[in-house]
Length: 109
Image (cartoon, rainbow, N blue to C red; front, side, top):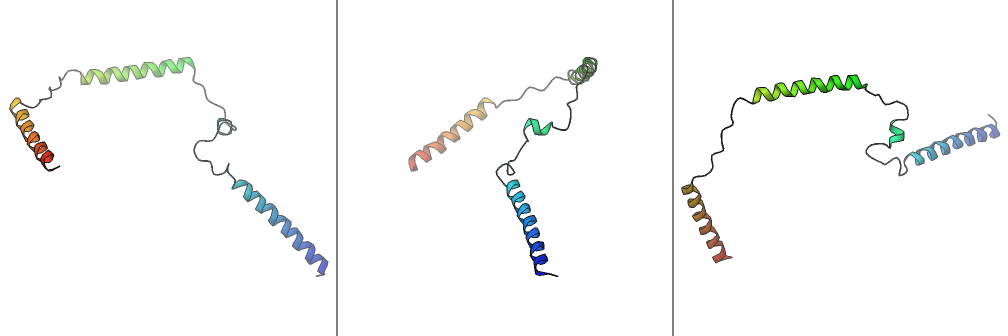
């Protein structure tokens, strides 16, 4: 091969490599490091949003109301047990214990 041909080939390779490097540097810029959801325009660029008809919305609403009504009716009959609180004697005993602990802590602290 001729020396001029080799130089021309190397220069074309260098141009391709420089182009690839600049493309990579652009993609590694601050916009490429963004995380999270893309902006609205980019997210919806290739697709259209689907709309539900009023009739379909009403059907779904009625079905959900029926589901919730049946779920509520199943759980309604049984009364919940009232929470049993602490007896007065137990409360008095715990109060005395805590007062004793705090007195010790205050004395040493």
